[in-house]
Length: 412
Ligand SMILES: Cc1ncc(COP(=O)(O)O)c(C=O)c1O
Image (cartoon, rainbow, N blue to C red; front, side, top):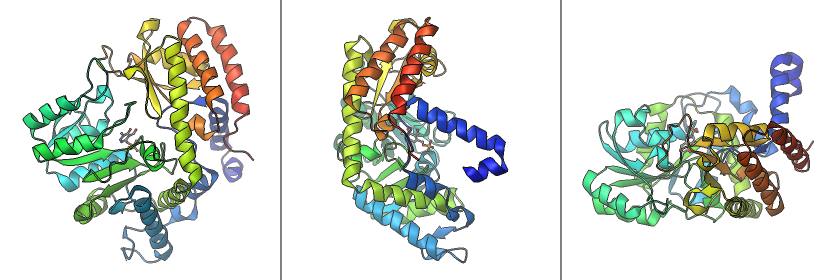
């Protein structure tokens, strides 16, 4: 950062302030994390300078020897981590990875069945204003009103009636284990292909604390920067028979030159994910989420599906007389950063919402554990119970800052 500060003090100052924000606040947005110094370095590495269109051994530019090596390494590490037959490590983002699967597997107008966005799904699973909802005919399944967990019988009913060509499972805000085997059975019953989008839970899968979808699915996509704690981007895994179609859908189908510095960062992150330390980290994410959930429930906060099996929970804040937007804003004033999120059967629009989503990956990366979870739960409760009390938030923010100082994000 020294070179930036010397050459461009304006950007330098913004970055210093961002470092301070990330250090002094409890980052509890479920899709965010702190990458390791090695991954951070790789993302700003020399490989940003090169075009490497194509694939290892089949590039369109000269000078790609080192790029072939790093991309092949990322591929072989990802294959080993997930047990996948084929992996493409070039997608720039999770959205593009999903787009590539649809391009490879479907024709415009084909039918997709996926989880409703307002019950935990993702934009790229068929939202009307997203490419997915514009190019394909989409139907949706959701959660049961009673349990707020996926109603697999309902998924089966809809699938039999709608006859999708592709079923998408996986979510952005679903706190429970996803039963991939059950989804496979449903897909087989209606002759559909199956894709799992494990953007959120990929780290948990690698760490052995969530079932692995790879053996059940035709395609699996994931971002690399959430629980997986890698550089920003995504990968696509698939069965061998789809390998060429997927590779062609990525390049030249939807992307030009791969972001090779990000691919280097993916290789580094996958190397980290192979360590026993990473498995323990994933266990701790889930343990922390459980403890936090139990503490929040104990203090009278309603959690969707009454808890969590993974790294996140969704809290209904309507009982406090506020919406999710207000809850996220006042929590941020107290140094606790979460996002507003619709909850199942929400009466409020996505711009307001009745809920917030809370995640433990980033605070677990800092080394926080059970004691800190209990403390954080008590702060969340106090802030939500007294939304008009600004002084309370100022006081809690000071406590948050003190706690964060004990858990540095990047020690010098
Ligand atoms: C389930 C799921 N799929 C896909 C994506 C999209 O990833 P990106 O933001 O990298 O496009 C997200 C992002 O939050 C996600 O939660």
